[in-house]
Length: 411
Length: 148
Image (cartoon, rainbow over all chains, first blue to last red; front, top):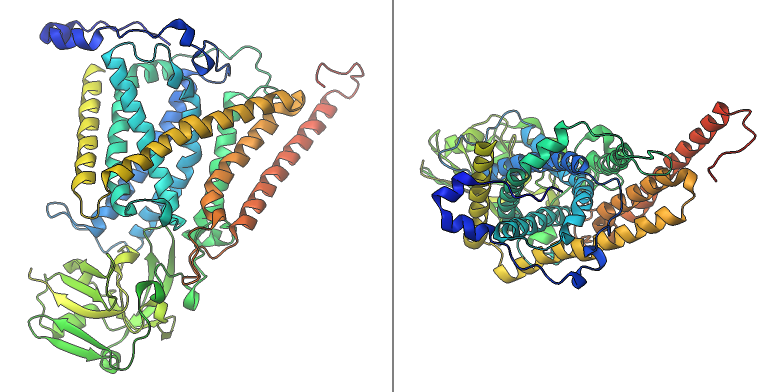
């Protein structure tokens, strides 16, 4: 590693006091403490190089970029921001693709991040531990970088494995906001390392001495192994959203064909506290003309059948045929304005996802149903019997089940 | 490059600050202490447990495995370790609940074993083709090689 401090004339002439403070050497610990992993030559692998670290860094950076962009999209689909364009209802499979990609890329990022951390691991024991204040700050930013990237992958996989008890916080909020910290730490890291990255990727490196590939792992060999791990992880999990590969999904947390009526369920009726829905069921509509429908009255409305994917934030998705009245027909009867948003409330008593606010575009979409039937049969209780919302291109958590109340919101 | 670096640092600090403010102020956000403990556990769990164990095992494998196939066998061990780590939360099954049988519906221990069997089958096939190729390349070499 090059340890020469770069001359910083411009900065130091502007703010000499700060620059001097940032560059003032910190005391070096006594040399006899330089033992174990701190000793020179403690990490002898000739495989490690700036070039390898830079290449693995690009792979990890690409994976985190995909996860961040798709994750922010998923957040915006659920929590719209006024000045941004609303999440669209077309193409109907967009969310299925973005969220499937989010989870698949996150799983693939686990081997990539571990390889990257391995390649940079000796830096953890660099000597002296902190040369000056700038160096100390940089090392602190690396701690934030490692902690938050590991945090994102650990919480992400814990969530799709439904291992909620391991997380002492509400997953969604912690995962979303930590993503911003992780991306910030990645950007700072790229800025700090930019000269090293450029040097590592532009200079032609001589092949390491004694490159007997059979004995010693080559850089190509390491890429092949990490690539193989990514391949195995992807092939055995991506079938939860890519239907043709579902039979290979031996490690996938969902199988698109397993569940009541051949469709997975994210939250079952028991988990939602719904025991049974009896004949006294009414769907109330609060709007300009308040209405109330019994199940028979909903069945008497014009019925439509749509084929739509249901796509979960957890990354699985499956296409199904849903039937029932259109939401917009019900809203028209209630005299709702065309540009009204609608809050769709479940019969379930609690839970953060008991209600969803649906944008006008989705409310008015001809594919948006108050579904009563799935694959030609009445909805199973787990799928939201007697009535659930089905919309094109919205996360599964917003497709409210056991719908009991529609509230037309002021535009 | 200097401008690019300054822009990157400022954008990074802004994103991180936005995230920290969100963590501290969002509805249903984490309580600070358990959150920091969890994040530190991940950091230290990697730096002080996972990495040293993996490095020790890797070094051991480098010493014990037959020289001739060392690189391939170490690669197979690496793939085995990485796939096992990813499969661990599913194989552990802590998230399974009988009240929702379509969540985690498979036997993930079997799934992991099948995946590992496939990895080692592929490794064996690679070893066999390499052995065949070496034999074909040196049909009359009776002196033997330095490998062994």
